[in-house]
Length: 589
Image (cartoon, rainbow, N blue to C red; front, side):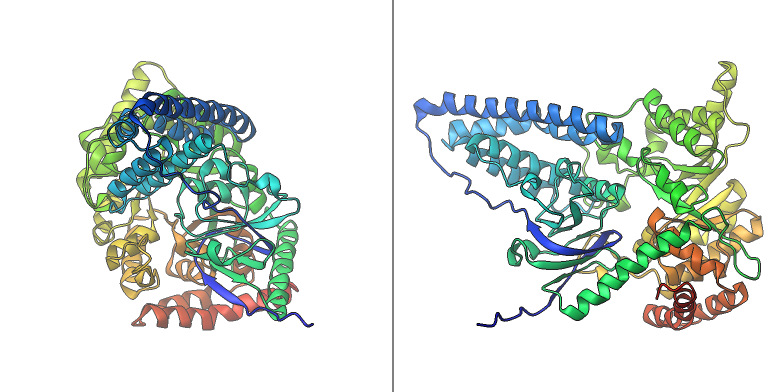
């Protein structure tokens, strides 16, 4: 009997970590056991509360043990992930809520934990904020750990995987992410999750391809099903045809060949055939594993996101600890430049009881720090102290008024004056830059340029704010296009303002990571592009095989087009030829 071949199914998600993987699926699901919904008798209330308290104690013990193991392995960058979950196990309100359900409604501990978790998750579900999204994930994961402890069953883990596979999760717990072994995990796919969640950041830092937001992949995929994961496009292909397998096998071979070719000119600049140069810098989130920056050919760090240092409400790194992080990066990469962006966080991160329906448009970042400068001042002190060890710049996000820039400059001057009085050394020159990520900052960039040393365009937020599109909302994400003429017009205004003031301008959003838009930005006058290290080799190859005059002409012509589709297709038609020629010339097509 001939076995019928299953038809290829394509799932569309969001790329969270670049790269391609081909292999068999290994599915890890929440639904491996039924959560008991049992009523208890009045005389058993006390013993049920004790069961709950013992579960907390045992889960804590396991988390402390894991924390010690993985912090030793990966460094203090990941310490706060465990501190968050340990903090939830000590949350008085949550503990009282569970015990109240046990006592008043006679629900067993498992049922009470499930209901309490759902209650707190529902409280946060309508808040469109990345930090709150991560807290929802943490609440769900710690709830499941407690229930597992109570029922005496564990979700099947990666230890059951004997050969390298593509692992599929409903959601990836950050503590699970730390256990991923690159030699055994070919790729990661999830039904849910955020691009900037703890888990996605960890997977990226490990260099494992990942796609998120696949909705029901775990429901239709079985263990050992053939699967392809494309972390570049956000596609996952179940039951791929032989033709599709050949296509992706070739893509992997091409990527490996590119990496080998890179080694022959890794230290050469990104400069066109007719002598025009652009700096290619790396975006980083952690201060460990900095070797990848030099291995990629990056000329420094264009964006060091510092938010991970404060992921846990109960564990904010003090100034000395932050100084150790910034000085470590600076020393390791010296003399390469390192641009450190100060905390870009909402007010409800710092003030537990503060609530606003749309934090991304509200009291956040510089707006919060102007009224509560202590956190920012402590961070700036740490950065300025670290400046003596290398080539550090300071970057301020979410700027929309002159007053905000002047506030920052005054605060920095106060710190420098204090340091001089105390004979604390710091670099004579520490460039101060601002992020252009709101329409207001782009339209006022001519005036802003008089008060700072450089611009860094955050294309993700600039697109979101210009087009009124929440990029975390799956229903409207299709409207989020940085190729939109309105976005490009604001970028052009910013570039012209920087040129007029003779200050450099960089781009550090998704636009800098796309080959077509990177060339567009270069042609419009952007001097620095900051992207994930893995994307640098191919972009450098393309630039070194290009003519700037042609790039500039195509870029200027693209500004006259009317829709994002027209812009993208025009760039693809023109720059696609350059990219194809590069692949052919280097035998990587």
